[in-house]
Length: 150
Image 1 (cartoon, rainbow, N blue to C red):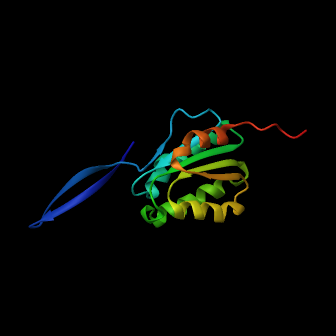
Image 2: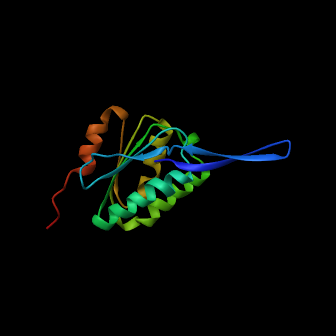
């Protein structure tokens, strides 16, 4: 689902407005196991992707699940994230800090892989990076149920 943007034009003192349809660059992945929420990022990612797609879906998911099992497929590089998107990504982590359980990042972008490994110590979850040809393995890993300690 996209969001609208107004584009205002001025020529010879006359004004007209075009409503542009902008496609969200983060989309929710459908068809995942019920205990997993997942998103895919492509192209240029901005704050509106988080506000309109990620935050509402995460809110609905955590109302039904006490543990966050998160699958994130990233086909775009960090250079295609706006500052607002990066800030909202950080906010997402803190909003659900005690609910994170497993995070599977699927990417072939070396910088994202490196940053994920570097910052994984700060997240109270099991974090694992997979390459794009390992999407099925990532989905299985993030969804699998471990035996609860007795």
